[in-house]
Amino acid sequence: MKQGFIQIYTGNGKGKTTAALGLALRAAGAGKKVYFGQFLKGQKYSELNALKRFKDLILVEQFGKKSFIIKEPQKNDIGQAKYAFKRIFRIVNEGQFDVVILDEINCAMKMKLIKISEVLKMLMNKPEYVEIILTGRNAPKEIIRIADLVTEMKEIKHYFREGIIARPGIEK
Image 1: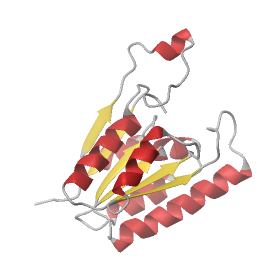
Image 2: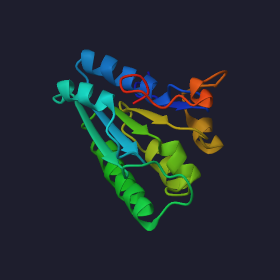
Image 3: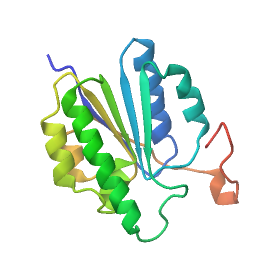
Image 4: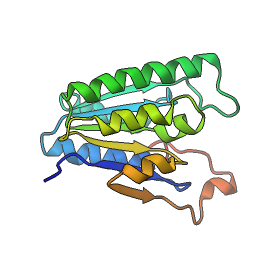
């Protein structure tokens, strides 16, 4: 029986990272070791403070600058994404974590910071017990094809459209 599945949380709605965080919390509650790698993110979020309480079971690393890429990625953005993927590729292959979360990796692939073929190689060769979660908008169809679970978050209505900025403890 298969143990470690590939999950994708994608779509234009709110909640992809939050769903991955919920899974990390659930896994830690069951005594599983979790790696949570964030592509394109270097900002401080409230959930990072909460995850510090589980530092014996959840390792969080951010690979990004203080602001999200708005236009074209800079040389530094490309370098950080490549470094992050190399590190995470090694972490997956070493198999010391039961759950590996690649937050915003779908966006990194969409921006061509990471090659889809490299992500596919990692997923196809992962230790069978390792659960991998990929988040971010625009999940590539090639990744969706091999995933075991795909959830699309769909925005119906969002107060951001009314000018409400991200609030601590709710969106950040």
